[in-house]
Image (cartoon, rainbow, N blue to C red; front, side):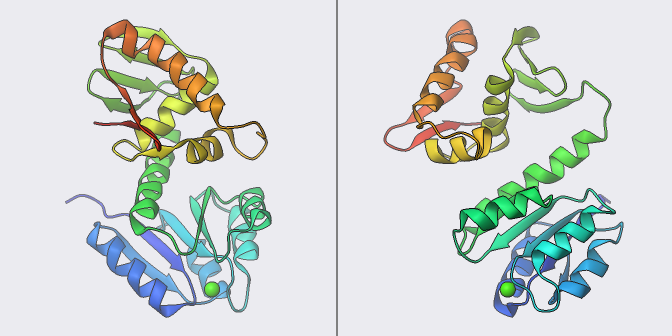
Length: 229
Ligand code: CA
């Protein structure tokens, strides 16, 4: 039998914790719940936890403090839940070592997608240099030197092109808005507008779609882009 991955939910709002527990169990994960910061810290340090969903506002010890202390001993992926769309909280969450954050209320499908991403990344990071990260049809993405292959043929990408393609492949079958791509691939240090996304999509298309006469990256008019697979 396949080993079930255990996800720790640190959340004092019972309704949310219970809801997440049901969704995660339905997805095949084991779930453990802590309803305060101290309990979350203890359980979070345990080796059998594969990922932590960590609420920011907690009784006892704050989510920020729990995250900071877990990071001193463990690289376990952490997704922070923040109650308000506050850039300061997001920056704080990522600065103290959280891998991702979600603002409440959030769509559970999106949380599940991000969990899958982080669990895969963690898995991949255990490999030396050139592991295949993802595969869609004839397309293979390799980690390490920003290289991809199409039908066995090498395609060299720049770091940003690779990161953009990787993000889209990881989130395949999800329509990604320019804002979301900008936020996740370029990050907070980028203050230009979202036209940069269209420019890079053009680069990728000329290196992949046009070269191999395929329609890998689809435009969703008025929304953004999607890779199906
Ligand atoms: Ca809370």
